[in-house]
Image (cartoon, rainbow, N blue to C red):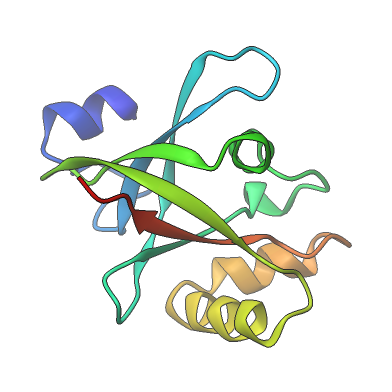
Length: 132
């Protein structure tokens, strides 16, 4: 999927065809190596992006989330541009997290389904473009 995304300007086929997909590259928390994964994103009113650590409803957070805890720097690929960003982890239990999660779940129902499949609270991350 990563190759298809890069070769087609951010477009991929089913099951994510037409979805607001981005690629994020984080530094592996244990390996120290770059790790690139596709994830859905949502554009916020201030131009930042929102991503959800759903991990398909699994009982563990996705690896990229653990990577961001250790080092919030990331690279974002949208298909049209690539830029440096920081992942700001929205505190679990905060009103901001609940509001942002509700917005994402309203746009993509699967997020509500994923939340119902696990006891953990799905992490919410704001992706902020780094200056320069």
